[in-house]
Image 1: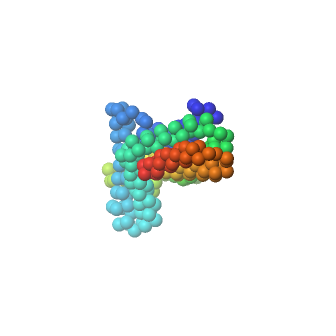
Image 2 (image 1 turned 90 degrees about the vertical axis):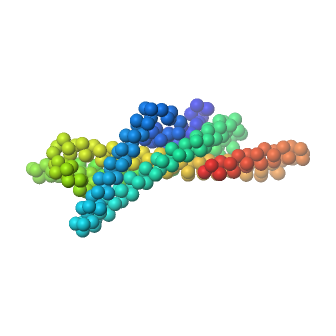
Image 3 (image 1 turned 30 degrees about the horizontal axis):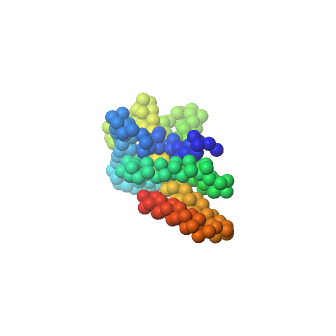
Length: 264
């Protein structure tokens, strides 16, 4: 373990990379190029939501296609949820920056700690990476089901001698688009749009949902260290001045952790 690799960006690289991909990472410079990227993401999410909402309200429910309405309604909720998560990351980006910098500071200090305390920090950091790995597995497998199902269905129709274009989502587009959805070029465009939305949603779940567990686990690790120091303090033969000084340091660290919890 070295200082360069023991940072939030390197330890929780899965979550960090996901935030970089969807451009929600708090350390990305907010310039005109970022605004352009953000508008693309927002347009993608809004378009996907409108297509799904349009299908549920104007076609699925009136036609009593309740199974499709349920599936498309769920994807509408996903579109709204990831947009809310993105807005949350943008609105509280200053707080997120502070949390990441605090974690980086504690990790750098941990390198100079005694082995037992350093191992505690590493143990909780590994638990945080486990949370990130859990989310990348769950989100990736879930999102991969949609295109794989469509590709498999199309492959089956190809084997039967009559290739059919099977969309990722069982939805009805607005009339002017729906009449063209069987045209190869339009089908490819709509399929590509759905895949982009699928990837974007995946990165939002991987980048957003592990954050709170990661920071809470870090706090637990710091409290574990303080508990270890308290036990060690009263088991050693120290004079009152040394005890008071060490208690003061422990109290200052507790105050820092309280502020960290307030940010969360």
